[in-house]
Image (cartoon, rainbow, N blue to C red; front, top):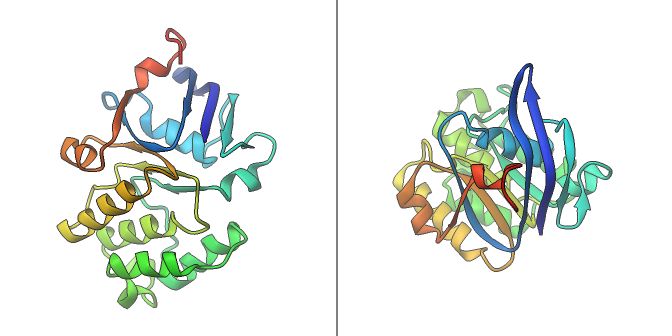
Length: 209
């Protein structure tokens, strides 16, 4: 359901991703590796937030390189640092994501918003929310459109224990129907969601994907 082949990305003279490839079926996968190896960059590239220099990416059989709108409609992405619009309310942010994916907010998303305790913040501007609340809002928004692929960068960072438990339950419950690729240094979190560990170095040019 998530396939990427020979993906490369450089910033200036620094080659961050060098012919990275993998084919991931449904399940939860924890992307591992030391700081600076390119985990966040890979997730950003796979989401379409950052353009790859070369290579190809398929999201639920939709080619990101030639049909980006169709591919992005099938994925949810939450970076570690939430790029929310400070003057937009929580409700407006959810509506913006739904509009971008050309879908409606479903009862499932409404239920996730409630489970994260976000209902009372829906009419609050994002710039007035705590970082933890912003994080929960971005995570909830990732489920808009019933995505087949979830890409999360350090999703447990900044979460209170209740929100952490909700996220664990959501990811564990979706293992049979979605691909969740998560960068995390939180070993307890990755164990709790039953993640298969993947070393980013094992996906590079020197290895067979």
